[in-house]
Length: 264
Image 1: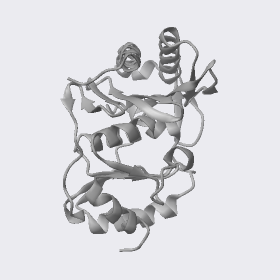
Image 2 (image 1 turned 90 degrees about the horizontal axis):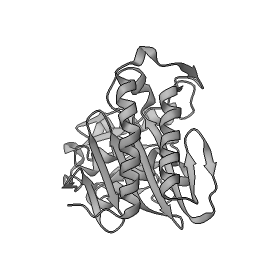
Image 3 (image 1 turned 180 degrees about the vertical axis):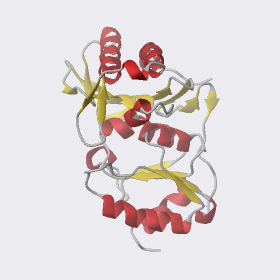
């Protein structure tokens, strides 16, 4: 059984409550009111309501904690040592197309360090959780990253820049290197789930550029607590600031870092 701190129990309860409404919305996509907020980037009434429910539930049980939200931005709390980082629907485009590959992502920072994480797909009822120093779990099953060590044997996940976003040429160059050296690449459209799937051994590695803290915060802790290595694409620990990330097991991480840098 996973160790669940009081804070993580609160996060799970909030995610399950918000997830019940998301499941209803997912079954009634034609009734959702959609407003465009950027090229290929849509916000829905479900997105906004999910974030509101999460903030209300977490604030009720953890008053004073701050927030960093995809929709609402930064909310400073009276307690300067704790902050929830939330993506109410990671994989909004999938959600709007009726593809059940999206998740609620919540991470808790304590004094700037990730200590609790949750990635929840309400459609599949897969609840990924992690506590710093206590491991990562999918529902009640302990997770370990896959043990493959050879690049030709591995499956790698990533995300491509949206239409109108910078970085397309860099991505295509890196993609060519990856697909030329590995058994395959997948682009499923939800970074939090990609990292959760890597923590569970479904993927062997994950890389992407230009992500936001709410895209990766929970996934970083999940991978690390499952025994994986996570850095930025320069091998440093500034993923939350620079938005670039590479995750793999200990044997693969340096090989992939060199490959993406063009050193192999």
